[in-house]
Structure formats: structure tokens, C-alpha cells
Image (tube, rainbow, N blue to C red; front, side, top):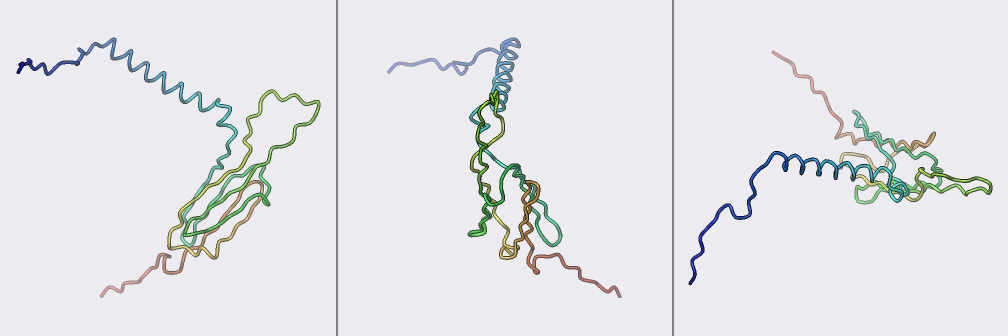
Length: 155
């Protein structure tokens, strides 16, 4: 049996400020490279993910979804197992002869957003409206879920 001397610092390099800051600079550069490549990625601009605002009010939830350029007949709203799903498609305009496209940044294609509804809503009474490219859903709360005030008489 061979004895090997234990070296607890085996593989540990000494800290040096220049090396430390160089590594930090490389990491920051990598982070910005990832960020800028996502912004200018041609493939990423082809997928459409509509933005959503969800507001809880006293009697209901209000959901607004921006769908610019989407025809209301191309939007479908479904509820299954307390999951609200909005799906649709933004169709690309056909290119016209004589026009030279230099850059296309607008998103086209199908999209889908899903949200889990709380059990305290009346999902069978959802009201939807679509105006100026904004889909608005009003989801009423059940009566038992609404806040109640009880007056306490002090003696």
C-alpha cells in the first residue's frame, strides 16, 4: 500500500485581482452578447407572443391582450379544466410586386396564451370584446368569493 500525502489546496489557484476582474468582464460580455442576440435574432421575431395585463377588481378579473393586426375571426377562446386559453393567428400580408422589403420586423404566425383560473370565478359567464386590436375579457367572481362587510355593534 502506498501512502499519498494529502494536499487540501490541490487544484485551487491563488486569487489575483486582474484575473478576477478579467473573468468578471468576460461574464458580463457573454451576458450582453446573449441579450443583444435575442433582440436582433431573425428567428425570434417570427414568433408572436401577445402581451397581457391581468387586473383583479372587487367583482371580477379583467384581462387585456394586445393583438395588433389580428382579425377577430382568427381568435379562439376556450376554457377546459379551469384553464383559459387564447389562441389565434396573425396572417402575413402578401408581398406586392414592385416593393423591395429591406427588413421585416413585425411578427406573424400562430400564438397561444394559457392561464389557470381561480376556482372563485364564474367561468361560464365570461364576457369578451375586441376593439382596436385589444381583446378584453371580463371574468366575474362568484358571489361567495366577493368580499363581505359585517357590521359589528360595540356595547
